[in-house]
Image (cartoon, rainbow, N blue to C red; front, side, top):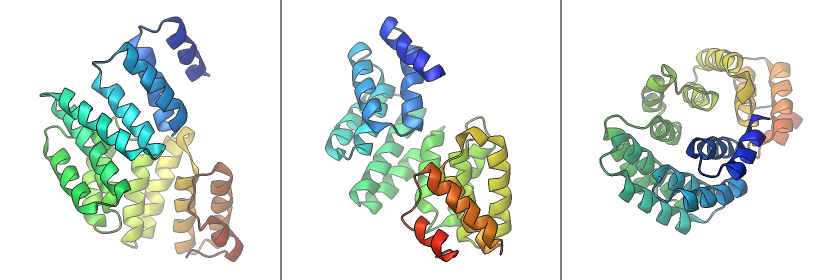
Length: 238
């Protein structure tokens, strides 16, 4: 695998910034929080002036539920962002996610609004805010995510946010089309969360057997909701 090659290179050539960036990006995408924490800390020892490594380290700590450490790391990253508007937007978005984890939704909203007001806003921050708004304001969530889906930052996780917003608006056909296209375009990014949603959409469209098949595949992949067994057993979205 490419990632194994990069991890070997990071040990053989520890001064190679791009190699570390690839390793951390992979671990972040795959939510390998323990490995990310260890590697991000090592990367910071080598590159103490790289704010992006503080962000990765903070994300790992949040994933491991060390919210205080994540908070301190993000504050340091924000201090280092200087006049870099995209980086500042990214850090503010991460701080918004951290406040959600703490249960402070008002603080999270304020941080997200600050983040997207910067020019240009970071795509991850737009997506995080859109995901946060899916239940309460799906229309705004779609407005936030659509520009990213028309850019090079488009991925299956971002597509899922739009599909979920359409689902919340009871636009099941629209949600199905978005998911269908995304699963074809980004088949290598398929995961349990996206397939569970696809099953929910299929159920709402009256395709119960197809829905159950998707839920079963989603369960095998993992990272589903706690309701997945109930959906499969009862052949029912609830």
